[in-house]
Length: 373
Image 1 (cartoon, one colour):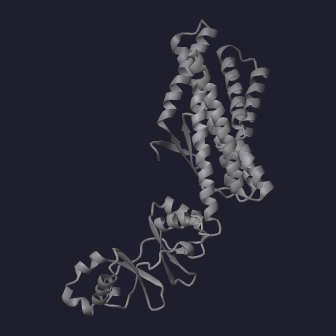
Image 2 (cartoon, rainbow, N blue to C red):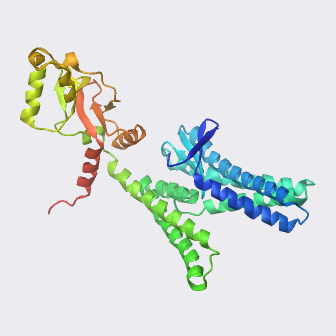
């Protein structure tokens, strides 16, 4: 998935690492090992490097704990967690779907910062009340401060940060519309993105300083992801209220199981369409199989008139979807299963037609076109 490396499971959740994480791991290890050597000159270079690596791994373990906080609350709400990924800017828990209510969305969003604050408190208490001193005490101090920073940074009220998801839940609660919450929180996230970019560009432009270069990267990250969230919210809102039946392709490639191959071939020549695969229905209109034009080559043309489609059709392998299924869920299913089309049936099994990704795109485009006066 996007070049990431799967390294195992965490409580049954697939755990991935993006290659960019190794760069940050090296930089953090080098930075903290140098800091420890400056603070404790008696440390050897090798030991300082080991302690620096340990510090870096503990910091990333804190990020994982933060993401597990989101994940466990989502799981309690019946939401599957697709994965947890570590990357250059921290971590990301990918959830199967959104929470059903703004209250539930709020708790999923705030769970991560609460875990970070809890870790900060625990580490601080251990450092203050225990006789630990020297480099280990310094590492505990770094761990506490980073967890505090992780919580506070993520509470910035703009998507894609946790604070943005909290803001989204609040606006959703006030307006009753989850998409308005996403749109508003995305706009705030874009504002913070521009502020972060400015804080990185101004010192670079006027003073030639790269001191805030990291702010520049974070700003671009916020700007891009906040914009993507806003666009996806608009897409979701347009699909609200639509079902699979609304996007079924007109004149879908459907044929009766009881016609012979000659009739089938003649129909396709007369209609002049470009379909290569057809769904097959019985007398009751129920889906019973599929046939492709290439299947006709397996039967001698002299036998076409006495060979019915049901004699050569193949069993249907693709998933069927009910006609009343929300179109947004259909889009998610198509993406998850990497499909371009699905058969649509009614509750009694009668085939409605075929639904293609292109038909969904056309439906969205037609809904955005202005109507003539």
